[in-house]
Image (cartoon, rainbow, N blue to C red; front, side, top):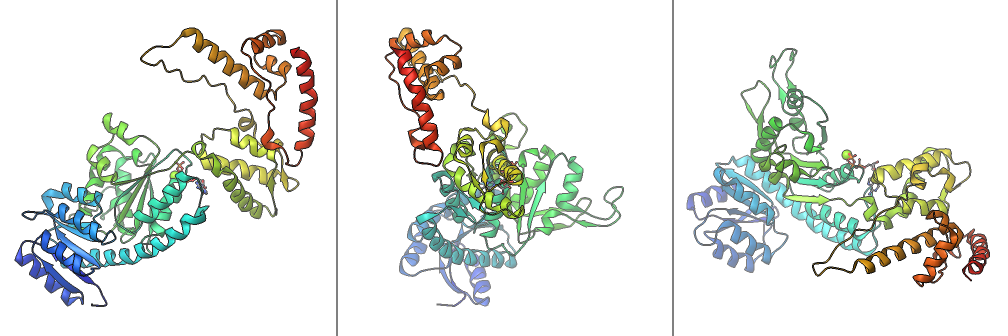
Length: 491
Ligand SMILES: Nc1ncnc2c1ncn2[C@@H]1O[C@H](COP(=O)(O)OP(=O)(O)OP(=O)(O)O)[C@@H](O)[C@H]1O
Ligand SMILES: [Mg+2]
């Protein structure tokens, strides 16, 4: 077997097989040819390949069918699809089924060689990443700079490992502050492009022409003030990654041009006539529902589908609260170091508050809260007093969601269940003290007491979970003292 790699070429046209054979052999690859899908599969079952080049349109088993079968034999095999320009749609389907990349006919020799080199590099990376993934699965709490050990975050890490090596366009979706940029950087760092540029495009509120001259560059004299020619971000990102932060902000007219770059990987500078080819990986992020924007005609449907090949959905912090302690620890260390404070820790009451809060600003908001506390703290223990007001008073009343089943429901029973739930929550919030619970519900203690009897609610001790932690003993005592009063009340 050749040291550079063994390549399987599958094409029904003899001339194409000959061209590719000559090109690849000359580059030092070991080449095996197959004239159709079944032949290719026979070969793949008897020997192992480092990459395959597969024609999309073949009589009998077509490229997609052959791709799927090849992947069953070797899931990691990078497969390059060759497609006629007119059927790029099929190429997208192929990417979704696991093809590494596609090349449109007629292709340039260099193009094939570059993509093939990427494919082989990817294969090595996939093998390394597989090993990494196995170690990660055991006891992960972070992936690069991304902290988390919740099931949702582990899924994200997995997807990064799987998707990073290819050139596939990736869409990262998540609320503000969930770590979209962090994930984009991580995708770049774990790809074969990591030693090349990572360029962020903040389209913000730029008018379309300015945005386009930023993206595509311009030639001298393209517009008033274009005294010098300028390279655009796409050119600067060549062989690297370009990251569109908040892709939903891109104006419709620029979207059309972006689509063309994604499809053809070429563009023209503003005012220019020469097409410029680039090899960039495109990553886009958004915190809006792009599908809805498509429905409203504010985002191009074709662009949406191009971006949508692989989507990384980042969970909101409120959906993965089990990661809060880890994140807190991470930020305490980070901001402790910045403020020359060591061994900072959060008092349990303060941590409780962070658990109760809803975190609309997600990890960024948590980071800000911890940074503020780290700056303001005097000792190394950060107490509840350093938790900002809006975080501590966030617990808002929430009506339960009522669902009336198709067979209907007894109004009286539903009302009783609602009353009971409300009383139980008030008692819990009052630490079991009836007088306090009555105050919370703005009713007289006697009224509450009547209702407790009517609903047969038993007094429950609160906060058992907190027993044993420093300061808990004192709390408990105070509570049980008051509970006796409660018991009196109840009689
Ligand atoms: N899982 C995480 N682990 C550690 N830090 C995180 C994590 N997620 C987010 N952060 C931090 O939170 C801040 C916001 O993250 P980032 O900028 O990636 O979010 P974003 O989703 O791009 O937000 P926006 O939509 O507002 O642009 C950064 O300082 C980042 O380092
Ligand atoms: Mg961002």
